[in-house]
Image 1 (cartoon, rainbow, N blue to C red):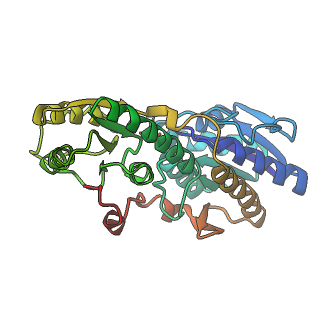
Image 2 (cartoon, protein in one colour):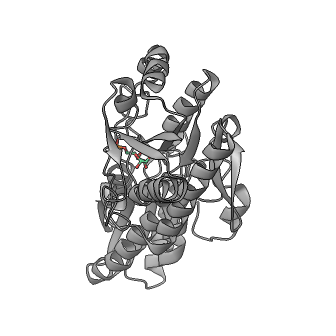
Image 3 (cartoon, protein in one colour):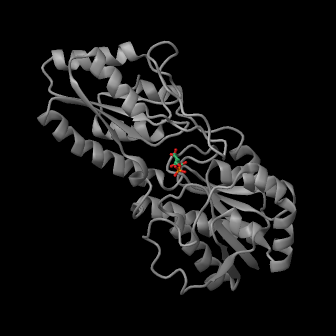
Length: 341
Ligand code: F6P
């Protein structure tokens, strides 16, 4: 077989582990040829690729980022590019394409799959918001980074008797906020799924200081929003990819808490540090297993599918099912964590 692999959308720790695993399984075990498209879908649309062999993937298992590069593509450009993608797949003699990506990438994968291209998707995202899989790789690493940061922030917050509002990633879902907040024992967690009441939040912080505690840590997912009318709140419009731009929940919440409580507060934005650097062992294993199973799916002709984790097993789910809705934090998970608003 001849396979093409690509990484698209926001990068995440573990992408290289998938690329390596696909190459090892395909080249070494099946005698396949593998090429890697540069910068995601752009590489496929512009026929920009490199050969991947065992040497090319040597030493990349623990490397963050992606040796193939990544980019976002506007949905309209991809729709216009379906014919070009089909031509390039035919020209290159590809029997399978393995796109590794999050929500946007998998939607694009579905579009190309519906147009008849042989696709097996691999889900990735630090946000953990892809349906049909228990976890995506990158999430464990991001939660680890955020938790370590929260642990560190506690000591400086306490020294200065401050409220720290720590913004973590999570555009539509609060998985990173929930898990890192839970792991670090945050005092309040706000997530996109549940618009929060700022009065309740201010009361929690106030009562904590009144009880003699010297600091408070609030974890805010970047997409969290206050309930309507509960505080003034700036939004940032949308970018060219149709994604909401954020105007800074940590900054706005910090100002609001300082205004309401007589306490010093600071915003801390963790940002892309959550996405960079080496993946955890868990993410390396999950990414490696996804890569292995994607190659096997391609050999069986199981196209239009995505690798998924169910319990401890790797399975395949239809791309159509995976991209239908985002996997938000289920309501019952909030009951397990006192600090979620
Ligand atoms: O989807 C992954 C993610 O890291 C989100 O958590 C975040 O909102 C977004 O990507 C940031 O994207 P960019 O790197 O394009 O600013």
